[in-house]
Length: 591
Figure 1 (cartoon, helix red, strand yellow):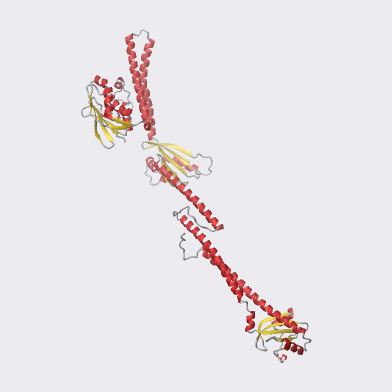
Figure 2 (figure 1 turned 90 degrees about the vertical axis):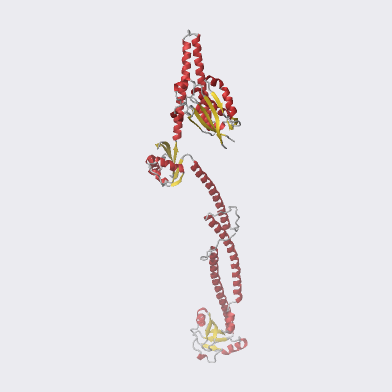
């Protein structure tokens, strides 16, 4: 694993920790060494003093009185130590005997000597290094007080004695080696700790920079508390990363949904700041507002939204109780109808949705008109049939010839009613189940020829000639019944309304990769130009009385238009140059 670049301006945490602990350890070690050094020196001083005190005791055992210097001399001659100086003093500090001076009277009083003061107070005393005024040589003094005299011995403080009193060098070597061993193991431990910290640091820095990381990567951590914590942090990060990915996907889904939604949606914070707004929301707001909106927040300045704005302000004003969390209003502006709804969320943020219901309103209006038209169209034949039947039932003496006329008229009206119900059923099926219509390869010329043969009697009665100019192999993938209804209804319309002694021409005047272009023209009486745009409306009639007399349902051309649309085509009507009416329409070839 690559370690992150180190900042030369600062020491890393592990180095700081190492140097801090080393500094503390070295201070403690120095204190310990100093203490042990001084303790060993004191020990050696005490040991040397103990030897001299023992020698003093031996001198005391052979010393009779203060005047018995002869005995001391004899003892010293027998047990003389190299360079050892022996002095006998009175408790008042006067020298009685000294091996380094023949005339003790010249030595002066020794009461102020440190070892003498200690012996008078504690029976024993010593002075490590003091230059003798008598000999001019530095000595190590050790004094012992007895009942009526003090015995003091002294060794010259020369190189040999100084070396003896010096601490053992082996102790320093051992201590130094021990310190190095401890520092080595501590450095190794710190190195492992530093590796874990650097790994965790790199992981945290990459996570903070949102850099791509393999969440399955394996990081080696020591088996201790730090390693456990690091592993837990990485596991938490992995879970957070997975959650973030899921949230990102859901956010993208939400944004995509908002952008393709058929309603305007705007989500705002508690402070009425834009969080998420789709394009339809902005478009609808500009349609409703009298001024163009530069930002989504300006929606709250639209006067038509005052009710919504008051609801939001009330919902965000404490205390927050069981206030309504949803409200909606209906608006009409610029010739369009809208439903505006506001929903308050738990954190007092909110969503405003705007639905354009103009089409629904128009469709609802059309359905109401269609229902009224159907009821009106059904009423006429039903009333006629009912009237004729009532006449026959209420009059027993009706001549048979007149009754036959009534029955024929009832039969004609029932046929008209049957055709009307059939056409309504066809239109309903095309409106509601276009995706369920079966498609097949249909030969249009063969279909048209068959259709013209079926209506040949009606054509002969009206002296209508047919020019079928369709070429062979015009094949369309479509529904046979609906394609048949296109050509049959156009033909029936011409037979019913175009007049007598006319001609009908059917041709395919063009084709491309996707469509066939058809023309169905007659040379009949035609229609006025103002009616052309409404010929395909349901129940639209140019001459209502004439249409009902001829038995038309008013739905034929509406069926033609829907069938053409189902086959992905378009249709329009125009005045034929030779008189009459011409329908131009396209039908998709299909694959």
